[in-house]
Amino acid sequence: MYGAAAMLIASKYEDIYPPEVSVFVKTSDHSFTKEALLAAEEHILKVLNYKVTFPTAYDFMWRYCKLFNVDATGRALALYIIELGFYEHNTNLWKPSELAAASIFLSCRLLNYTFDWTLFHE
Image 1: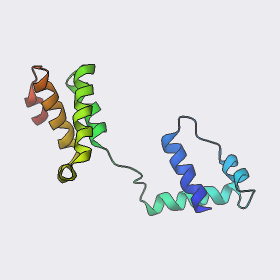
Image 2: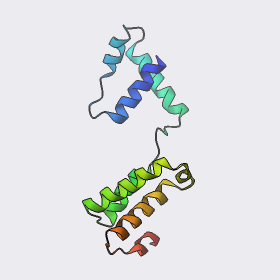
Image 3: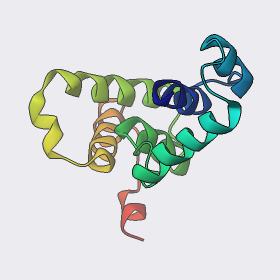
């Protein structure tokens, strides 16, 4: 039942249209009730203190790009730079927000964009 509850949580997080709870009950051949599944889901979330995920460098990159009006080319290059960091274990030493800021900085420098970095300190 807890496996189904974990799948329910994951589907709510990842899917645009997550399956109904009744689908999980049916798939399990009615080995538990809808109420029991929802109770298991609640238990899992309470144990996790409702911390299902954390912001990644990708999330920060999108926010920074919107904040500083970085165009599609700059965003694509910044994303590529972040993905290059996946091959280096040393990138785990920095916070995701720092990796995103560095990737945007490098992207803008490579593309010769002017950028007002003082906005990061306000």
